[in-house]
Image 1 (cartoon, rainbow, N blue to C red):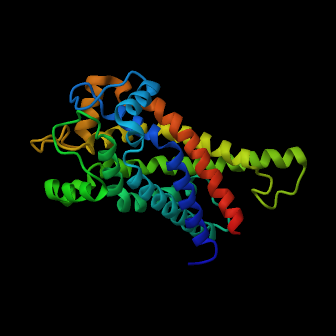
Image 2: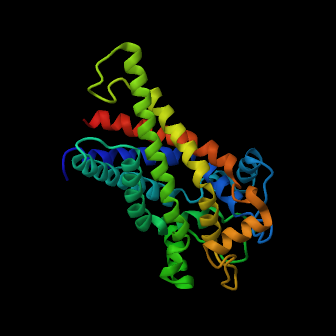
Image 3: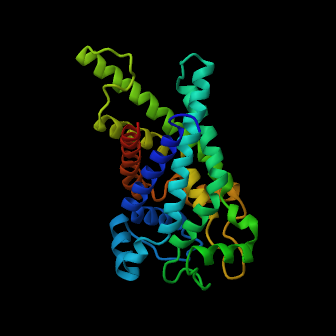
Length: 302
């Protein structure tokens, strides 16, 4: 592995780990809001994010707030480590081809390449995480999964290998989320760095020389909000497809297109943005933490 590539992977992995541990309960709330379509009700309903958090804590305890934490940690650590590695390798490749001129389009392409590779590898992990997060009391009559291993073996037994790749289609479409986020992140860093250079009349030979932790946090949060609003409906569709089939083995939706059509038909545009509030509460600080930790670890390793 060439210089700094292993550092990108290590920094990304540490950033992903820190993000999941700190904000996992909000991810559970987001997932439960997303799958509640008002027609295939197989779990509890919540009035708001605060009501959901307090209800889960009261009825399921702290373990309920951290259901699915193991696959979330595994998936996030692998995803971010691999993502930063593949992204920086692609960016370096385009940088060599274009004499150091890598603009928004090439940042977008680099992030899309990285996201596609990561999605193919980690979809089973995210599916297991979603299933474990939805195991609220009263959610279906099937025997709950006892853990990650039991979930994987049960899915293979009941649904086959294809079961582990449910939601892959919208998952691949969600690659655009990471691509848009990384493109925005790189461009925001450039804008902030340029503004700093003008203010302090400093040499700009090093693009990020003037950036501070606050700048990285701002760039991470802003880029995440932009990408989230653009791609959130894909996340809702994926969560609904990844639900466990009922006791007869029948899924709520036959595929991504049906899920998208029925959601819009019965719930309108608001249905495609269900769970957005806890998603914003989770993803904005999570992206801030991820990029801040990543840049800090990169500086430390270098």
